[in-house]
Image 1 (tube, rainbow, N blue to C red):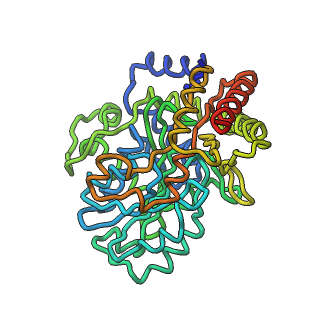
Image 2: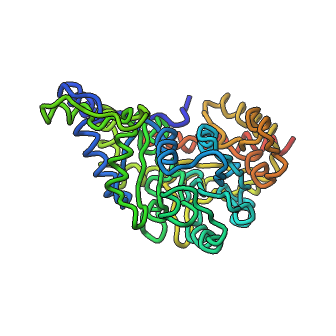
Length: 403
């Protein structure tokens, strides 16, 4: 069975983790801090804070920023539940935005139409690793600035809608040869086991807030928030020789450990030279392999100014229904190919239905979802396996369309 997306774990990974285990310091410490600096350099962020998941990283920042009851945050309907779930924790209201027709990322016209005086954050999601149109989103934010009504000091300092990118898929994606992350006020990354770069579980905030914000001070504050509001972490207490600390807020517990960061360092060291080129080669092989099929819709991977991180290969099949897609997945499983679906739009889920969201309000998201199958993309996937996947997909889909 060809798996969907196993992590790359080799001797170099094992040695890095073993080194941390043998060091006697396994929780947040020097390795995590070094990883943050390396990540900040890679994504060109002012500061990076590594935490234990995308979800906690995003919620931690939005809590600090002041998102609360009565606030609206614009989120794609076509995304994983974490993007919107955290907003309910904050008491805010997710305003779901439809996808662009024949694409996966959010529709700019629908986005613009849903901005109100309550809108405090726009959270675009780079689905599959292909960056959203951040230049256009910035322009929309500028044009809607007169509607903006700040409720706290942070919102007053920014004096416009915050652009917070859900970059869970897009580490390594570029816009105009620059990291996609530089185009947002804040970018939030996931290092879950299936992501391009993994730390087993983990996430990171990339801070690029403009003046008068001080990203160094925000980093220090969020670091305290991530450790129960404690003014000294375990390492600094040990190094300083003083155990005394203060609790300055009722914080949370979502720090990254040095064991996780050690995996991340190995992953990042070979990310641009090995991981991204291999994922790109796999996706290009699929694209070429299906290019002559009349039912094939190529996923967005590269345009004149943007390039994906090749996190997913989202195969779309013209004329497919969701039942046909599910049958194709079963046929592929019989042929030894594991697949997935990214994503079921949020209004399909019971919780979101009960909140009053109606899937019929998001026709483009429905169209993409019903016809999509995500194919295996991982570093150790061989060309023989790729060829088998391509042939299996063709046989399975053609058999269903012929019926």
